[in-house]
Image 1 (spheres, rainbow, N blue to C red):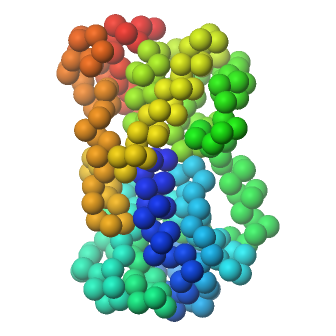
Image 2 (image 1 turned 30 degrees about the vertical axis):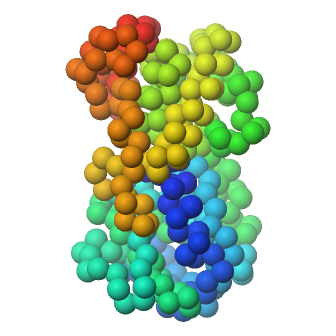
Length: 275
């Protein structure tokens, strides 16, 4: 599933294509994308809208329109965006929607597993919609070590599950949680509320470092993810633990181990991330 670095990469690449452009035609061919709203109604509402800004909140892309409405796009597991000159998008059995712009570009949404969503929200609905689902952004200046400590206080859940809870911290998924915990030398099963001050400070630095590295390398391409420009991410070349079961730890040498926490695979070093 695309996490904060992947979605931020998509935002950075698609923003120059969409911002300032007017949608002259829209086609949504998959009813699952907009349900329970009929896709034709969403497509019709998008036509004539000018894109003011492309923003991101957690794993959500926010396409802000001049009318005040926002198209909220969640890529879920396999959603992605592509763009090309009008009429030049390649044939794609997994294309679920297409927007034509007055700039002579087409933007396509493709999704192999069909779990992604498009929701067109009025201004009054957007803030409560996001507030109910998302905690603070981990890369903003206001996300301090003290903020992380307050969020973790009293939490009995494993720190890995705590990091994955979008209501606590927005945008962190399986990959970057494992990478951050390795950097911080913290076992993923440790209860979040039992971490000491020094450990929380290390985790704060490690989480931000892992996410920033992911953004720098344009995300991780493991299966379906690629950027709107069609290139793969490069973060997978820098993994220290994720997906590396049996390989030596980059820091101390013993084989990386895998366990399951909260139904999610979790990779860690059994020596330098002792429980």
